[in-house]
Length: 526
Ligand code: SAH
Image 1 (spheres, protein in one colour):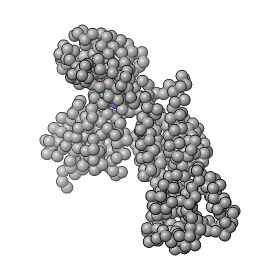
Image 2 (image 1 turned 60 degrees about the horizontal axis):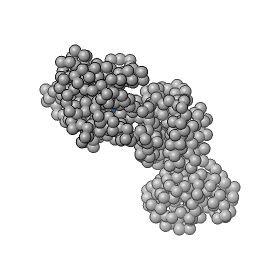
Image 3 (image 1 turned 90 degrees about the vertical axis):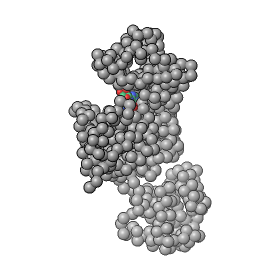
Image 4 (image 1 turned 30 degrees about the vertical axis):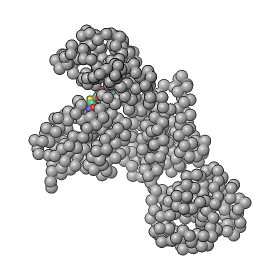
């Protein structure tokens, strides 16, 4: 077995989209991911499902792994022939101890690459509307550690030089020492009224900013109980925030929103949440797949052989359309053999999926539920006609039952089945426990059922209790009913059963909550 390789990767400041393309590739191709607290948790979802994931950061119950042990771990994994991704917050060369890791790898003759990341020193202020340089205010910036004990700080930092540097001062790891830092800066000549900002958990849902001056910032930190990790910005550029703050103005800022739908369908919803300033967190609990049962497959094949006998093909979901066409392809059936049939589609997305395949639906109800379809079909249906209903195995019975009541023959075809996704997520239970998921979205009854089952499987005994602090958002009344049946309190409900409707309802709820003076989200303080 040959030697493995180690990628020393900067994950960026937290927002998972702020990683480099090269860094993402390294995550995707690695056999093992060694990560710590500041690397965005969603990035782990990009690793191969079989990749080993090793957490080496701080834990409440035990001490941080020593740096020497981490260095050795990387060597050991590579000696086993593994490709390893060492994922670090921000940039790996900025207070990231990448030098020590690379040095040991070099001594063992193990190949490594250093893949830079966006450092929090620059990105976190930017997300608070503070540019680190400015033509009129700062023509340089210094990035300084605030971590050392005061006597060591004095040895490693030349306070007189730092203080009198022309530009912005950025302190990392400095929250606990804010008093000492401001004292030194004033002592060495920065005016006490110099503006200061502390930005905690920048680029994440928890981003919060505290501003003041060198003279009063320590008091403010104490009064508000402001906690690390934060970037401390000292200098005139802090004033820019008053006009340049941007992400905090977005309607979903401060919310981490769980997206439970199938991986293949999640990105559309995630994209909309992201666009509005929320932080999507994907945890797919369902996946769709071709049916496995031979009897079901036999029924599908038989129905497609009889294509000419149908008067109606009724499609009720995008998945239904996709899988219907997958079957046509698999059975080599030309869609023109359905020439006698009219096509009906529920909802614009379903209609769009049909159009993409060259079929313009004959009947298209304005609204999105089976009831609406029946209403618009009523005048057109004749007793004795035959309707094909390609759908998922969990589809409601209402439509076929009603068609039969009207004297039609309704042939239900389970062209796909919905299975529970084998999603594994080591971080989600922790996030839920500490209130780090602010909204849970459900886009179908099966997302509710499977989500609750997934939580129980991961050892959570009372999921509804765990979710009490979170907003529960449902796409429609059927989904909401299922959620209530599972003991959840639905607080957000789409007016129209579409993703846009769901997102609009979230925005509305967020606005309302922010209006209520009593509402004090742990996240999203500004
Ligand atoms: N290599 C990292 C820095 C590691 S030192 C980088 O380039 O960003 C850890 C310190 O970084 C923290 O104490 C804090 O000061 C800062 N930091 C990292 N991520 C941060 C974030 N999302 N928000 C605020 N501060 C952050």
